Image (cartoon, helix red, strand yellow):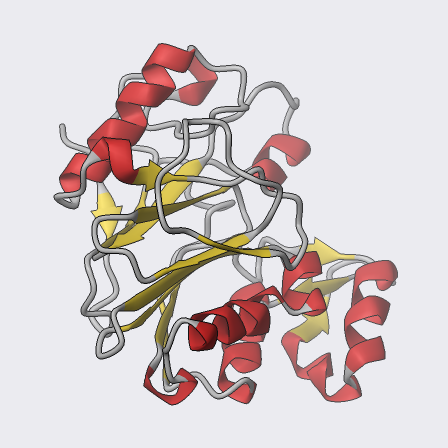
Length: 253
């Protein structure tokens, strides 16, 4: 089985949101684990990442990733770096042909961007902290510095934790509402008092639309609920813990 991915029809640039299927890793990492820091066999992870790149027609040597920290730093990529040597950041942009931008996620939202006319692409890791702090807006701004027009940018939000799976406490809700009380629309009452269900994907979509992105697509899929296709930190937390893999999302031109 080749590396399995899902694509967004609205995004014309070559890209894929990969599932956990079609790799060589075993045990809790089965099978397309693409995280270099997961504790998996490094050779297996390297093969998985190469399979993912090749599935999209990209050169595995041109695939770059980050040391993701749930922040808003954006890196401009002009040449590949060694696997595992990515800077501490949560988004990348590039106007260099052949560069493949890769984001790893376990439940956070992977977001891929393109302005096909300008030849500028972007990729961001958007957990609730990064999305709240402005990583998506920062990515659009960095793309504009390379010549992109936000009004032409197409953004695609990949599978992430779904609202039915994402129960949060007052600390998260209060932090989100402190920025804008209107964002209460992304919360519904949870099953337990003092808890709510948070719609991360729709929150990201609204932040992108408010920032002026020309089109925002969203792929349906709950990483926590769908153990067959996705790795999930929340599912691990609700279970017995232990090691876990991450899925990869790639865009390149």
